[in-house]
Image (tube, rainbow, N blue to C red; front, side, top):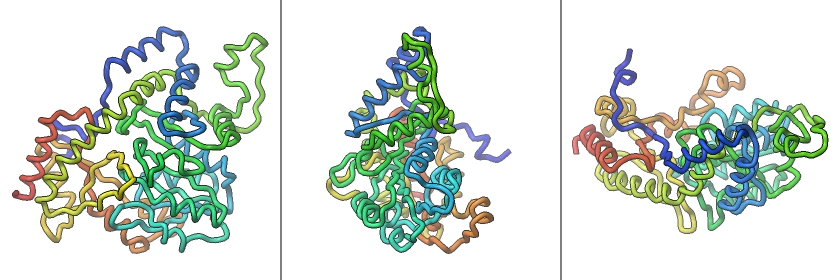
Length: 387
């Protein structure tokens, strides 16, 4: 077994910050007799929509489900193309394949890690039906540029905001800028429900389409049938999916949302401490966000070029031996086996994304980290570089 696998981790990568309020709400849900999609899910949807300023919010079991259903709601299917970034988790691209469309990658801006609008513009064809920009690490993309392209060419703007619940772009809250915006509540995310996701949209028709599709295509899911005085009949209007969120998940989410500003402040404090350290290290970071933009600080990423010292993998191994977890966000999607073999992608096609993927390392970041744990990360990283 490798050293990475056996090392004792005293600083976890991204532990969830779960408090007594979440635990009490889960217990109350268990005692309520209703565990699946019900009143707490609707309460969570309303609270989340209010937080981001969206007209409609639909809770689901993952951000992946949100991306999938958003593409279906946008009418994307076989013969269509969807443009996205190669610097993302594979789910962003996988959902394009799920709907029968062809994934088209465009390169990222080396200074931000985000999808480059100019590269997207160059990749647009007559078959383009949607673009999925990813707010990488919590840094909002250039939403105005993507909105202009979507309006000009008539395709859907589906934002992958798995990292960016707290984000603001050009004064606009993420969740209000795309035709569909998809959020993740996975265990490591800034707001967690263990597993879960949300889609926001301004379209009542699309919100209802997603809601119905998320529960097998039924016109009356279980909670509405349970409440009804009349016989609990329903129809199936589309061959839907099992993508619904449960009240148990929403019970956690309600209190995670209530704490999100406090958690965001803690994330900023930790990121600032890392900034102080990295100013003294031979590592690169992405440029600061412009005025009017708020970074969600989901990840703290550094770029490590072995020409100026140890390699990225050597640094990760040294941190692990010091009890500090780290991660890579992300291996370039177009170089995964499936995408190479199915679509013929090769190294060298997207040099900026590949350079980041080859050198990026994410440091531990969570409001649950103690000051002592943060200092352990700082000390370990400083020792690796001998500063």
